[in-house]
Image 1 (tube, rainbow, N blue to C red):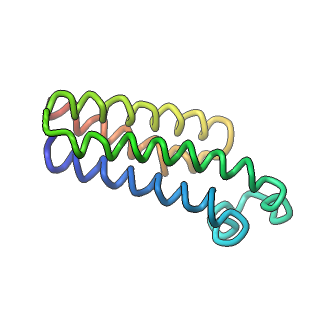
Image 2 (image 1 turned 120 degrees about the horizontal axis):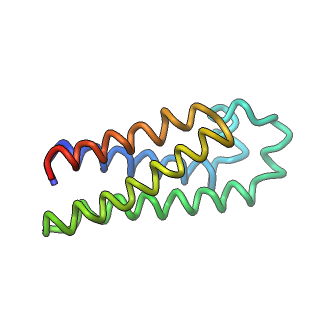
Length: 121
């Protein structure tokens, strides 16, 4: 994997760690400022659901960190492709069902990551 691809994958992993933190640990505090379309009275009611979503974002982050630790280039790229594909699908689904903003926050960065891997495959 090229340095550019590693940077992109690393950035997306950090983004998902941030989302994990927001959804699991800061849902009723900081997340209110990030998820402005959710009515304020819903944060406490959806705290457990958000924590569950945060856990899934943690799995995505772990899957994106994993290829950065693999020395075999082909294996590393294949793992990165899989997890970037998961992020892309989740981002598209989120954009269609929850908020168009998710397309720009998750799906497009994942697509850029996939393209960076394809260009240098």
